[in-house]
Length: 482
Image (cartoon, rainbow, N blue to C red):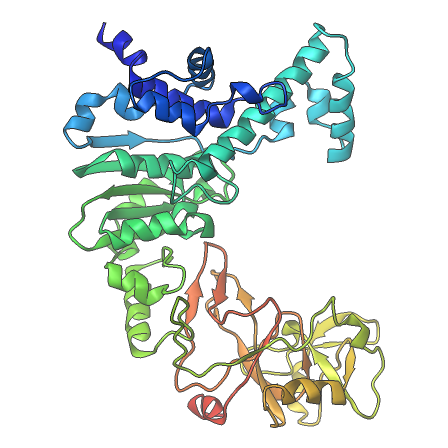
């Protein structure tokens, strides 16, 4: 009787109206049967919504399995939330994947050679006779696609998921935020989700919330290389996340291959909220270290040197960095010349230099790049041969915009694998044109710091576009002993 009363309570009707407003089809024929704020206001003020709208909304909410947590568990709500929550939520994109939908329904469509062919086969289903299996499959596809779009809209715009309802939403992120919402102040929640919950840009606000509010107890990251989860791709890292009020330190581990390795104290490290900010001040995402020693060394280095640029409302630029986007591989391709000539400068690409070595790779007569040989490096007169050349006047004009008149530049490789021992690779070079991941840093008094990214990549925290340049001061080179 109590459950029946709850089902027809004012709060339940209001909740169903709110959900139905997102999931009901919006067509000219149905526009009068879509709940509005007026209907919600009427219900919340002891009245009734428009005629027949209540049953329509309740039916729509039931059809999509809408679950109103605090109406189902009012006694838990009255006590402040759940004491313990455990879960392994689904890891699925809300956006409907055509191949996945038809995999168990029509292998012919699922295995189509490409998207356009699949689209043609799906369109052919719409021409089938009403009531036929083919037409029913098409109708089911349309309903599934619309439900996915409506669910995505609910995640983005309802306010139910203010921290994770962004971008191409994955269900695991929504579940993670739900755990945080349902947990009592002194409760705990533990769940298994992809490591992206702590490293991806789309979930960084949720991770920041956990850290800044002292709610991240532990983040134990696993590599699935040994197929702990056989059905999950081996390159998909995942994490055991525990949230709740912590003592100030969060315990972390990464690249764990088996549960037994968690017992190795050398693989685990702790970070305070201030240390999360110290290491990744711009994204506030989860730092990824293989060992406690790596974490302690990084913290020590980062305390000794300020971040290159700290983004935010009041940007901090302690190194005096200036950025320049000299040339773009696509937009400026008309400036690239195939032959050298007097008054032309080589076009440097990131592949052409390495650590303190501006003669790392060169182009041969066949137009392919190759590493510079030891014998060529031993020749002080040897210079690398680029793929393209640019008029010196064009380069001079662009450098003049930044008041840069010196005859040298400093380049760095913008992206490096996180598994590399060096994640910041730079070299001084003669004045040249620069493009394709070959920017230049500037005016510095100490070591450059990197901003950690998701597992597999780290990106130098210099901002700017994909291909840019930085102005480099004389004391930068002196600090490196050049």
